Length: 242
Image 1 (tube, rainbow, N blue to C red):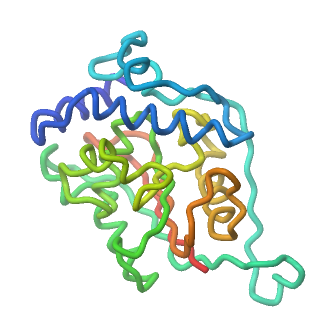
Image 2 (image 1 turned 90 degrees about the vertical axis):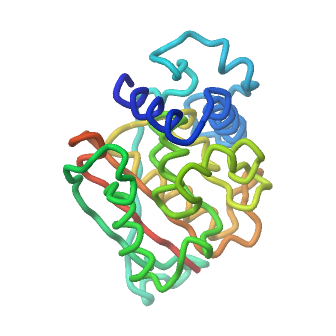
């Protein structure tokens, strides 16, 4: 969390991101989790509650940080003939995996997620403007802000404001982490990536229940792990579609 906090402080210095905007993301994800019976934390928190919670490492408070939890996830990948009787099939449009690189901390265009997202979009034949719903590796609320920018969903520096005005909330233009994210759903490490895929498949099938994103057709999942020279050591991006 100290590393994530340092990255958050750098983003605040470069773009004017505020602690309150980060708290908005955490409150949003806790609200999303209310409707997820597989979420670890299902308690609504106001922005003020998040800000008043126990400090972890500025600007992070405990509700902004993902808990390490137990959990499991599985998927079945098959050809079109294997979908008989399954219902609405979801296609894997692209999958890209890469490792971090040494770069200046402020060279966000070189962040591993940035070129990986470009590869994934090209392979899928879509762009960030086509994405209807996203699940990202929000080990902290700040991470969600950063990753939405690195995925090209928002311009660098614009992710916090987008969250603050409700763009990434259910009912907004581009819901992010409708599952509640790692902050609320929990972070079972090895199962986290497939848990994101599970959520997005449910969304694309129209099975999201109270957290359903209307008319979702294109979804993106981003998962990362470890640290290398100021960024994720490994990242994986998947684009799904119907």
